[in-house]
Amino acid sequence: MTYEGNCHLGDLFTSRREKGRQGLPTLSVTINEGVVRRDSLDRKQETSLLPEEHLLARRNDIAYNMMRMWQGAFGLVNQEGLVSPAYVVLTPKENVDPLYASFLFKASRSIYLFWAYSHGLTEDRLRLYFDDFAKIPVLVPNLDAQRAIGRLFRTWDDALAKAHALLENSRHQKLALMQLLLTGQKRIGPFIAKRRVAHLGEFFSERVETGFQNLPLLSITRDDGVVPRNEISEKDVSSIDKTNYRRICPGDIGYNTMRMWQGISALSSLEGIISPAYTVVIPNQDINGRFFAHLFKFAPVVFQFYRYSQGLVSDTWNLSFKDFAAIRVEIPSLEEQIAIADVLDTADGVINAAERLVQRLEQEKRALMQQLLIITGKHQVHLLDATAAAAP
Image (cartoon, rainbow, N blue to C red; front, side, top):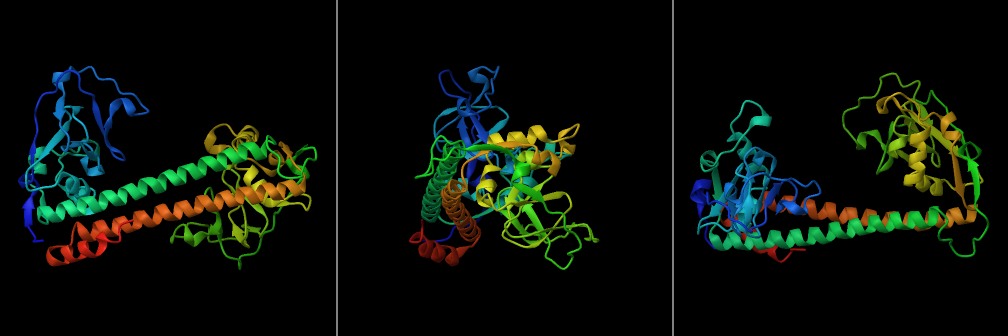
């Protein structure tokens, strides 16, 4: 394979200005999904334009939103259709593979150049007209290499799509398990004891211990639980004076007093101090903390946190321990709580594994894009040969 070298995007594409015609579907350009049928969007967007007032987009064209190209609003056209006249329709010339180009345009360097060549006084008014698009310099390999790179990234995207589907399925399965197990619709094993209804104040006490500045600073997150503060951000925005910061211990449950109605709570496996904006509760010995950590993420219970929060507007709503303690919940025996927690912990493990798979594939794809879409000459060809066999 040989190397083509430098050129401009105008050497690779022309602007298709054909009028639309009756009977074709209307297509939309999205930032995340590329070009899709408009009737597939959740938010239906009606148009008052006649078909001939639209632009025609043919299969293997690339359509982009002039005002959002710098944000990645473009996509490869997979079926003939109509697009808004506010779009630009690119028709590939014989020296460019459209699939390759669709990945080339996603590279961070390309996105930067789309922004740099757009015109407008503010970001809301930036537009990338075809004449300016055509001036953008680009580095491309020969056509055979383009096709090979395009096939490689399509394989990678197929693997990512399957990984995302696995992740979504895992999340839906956990939600279904929560609905069955936390409501008592399904009982586990021999645990048939009657479920009891009681106030949370019967199961928890509040931990208000301050003056432990020597302990590490922690934060409570919605998805990752209780974590060291420096894992979230290298910048410490906490107060210099931490004498009022609260101690949290392994087995405690901490929650964001102003965001408990959004489900921000977690069981802690760490000892440390957290902002006084959090509330720390200690489970008594008659309950299982892991079970309640899952229960506090269950939508009907989160809705109770919303109902019992006090404040005039959502920005000031807070759930004090007094109000938390007044909430009534229905729970099974301690033995069944442990069994349910084991099942839901296993479901979380499956979700975490799927998340790690998605993250790994995305990181590896970004690294490949950085190398294959920017590296030039022999290095690009050799790297392509080395990575083709490693495709997921």
